[in-house]
Image (cartoon, rainbow, N blue to C red; front, side):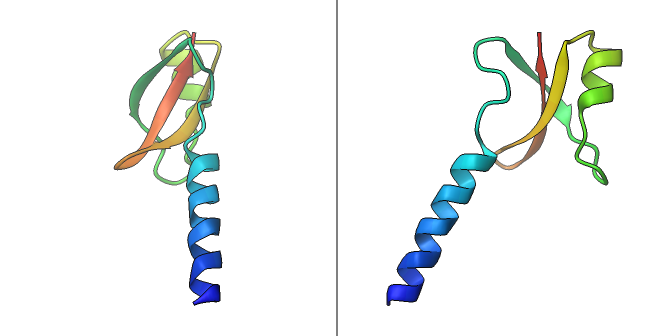
Length: 68
């Protein structure tokens, strides 16, 4: 019982860290991340003209977050 409670707490913490906003108040989503590298930097900066990009988990998949 104690072990399952610890696993539950760790899962909740992990999900909170993964889903944290890359750039609050100035973000927009553009497609899914690169399947192999989970990298959005090139897509966001070169193709979208954004300052930066980060791959974040937004249910149900990983998405590119481009920062303006």
